[in-house]
Image (cartoon, rainbow, N blue to C red; front, side, top):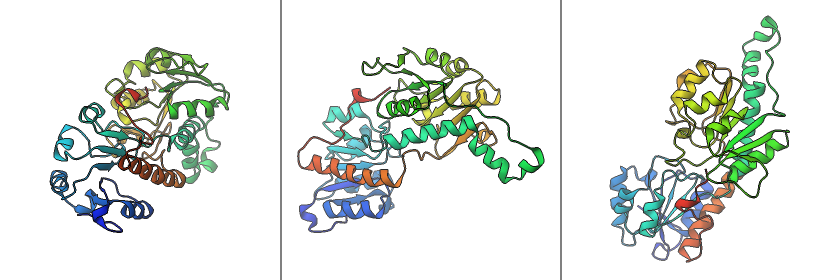
Length: 334
């Protein structure tokens, strides 16, 4: 079940639940005995049972951020030796942090590895929606320009009031980028941030009512599931645009589709969806909607940084040092 460079007897075992690139795979195999779920071809229960029965059962696991493997009580019951979970995403909605804490299982996420790239992407989505870059490109490609004339006007970004839900690592970077465009920044979070001068709104509906653009950049928790609902969309209004680089379930997707169809909001830029990889087919024909397949986090540079970061968390755990990017139930940003 395992593979490693060197003497496996001297290497700690790690469960792997993602398909790594060649560099990640080589680095992992040099340092650990890798028990690879995808390579095993086994159902998850059988794979976990076999891992638990290893002579030196695994004490750490790497899981995909937002992936199909959920680290909950039943998962931890199956591998009682597990004492560390490293997520390759910033979001940890697939990990029961409270249950991990109760059992003494340390949890780490990707830290700030993706923050700059996601912030860039959020701004890109917003520019695309407002200036209709993708839609205008389709207009040219289908030969409409010579026949139908100039493409309809878009809307400028400068001066827009932007409400950000979740002013954490990513939300703060989005705010700074949009400040450079001359946007006015508002935000909602669990508590006001003393370090910023942006206007704080205690609830998302009031934030939406005072915003031209609503950016979802919060973690997915019970409190933030469908935090953007029908009332929030109505408060955002006919000229409003929504951008989501958080999690799909932060928005009531059915209500969003309805609001777009009925012209209750002006547009949307979505990198995440409620039931990925499935998306609402009604969105496909909407020129005021920009869609992308949950790729805001991915660049060549971030992939390389993630490799270093993930190995760093594992090596810190196995050497008894503090994790590079520890996560606790009270550290989730809204």
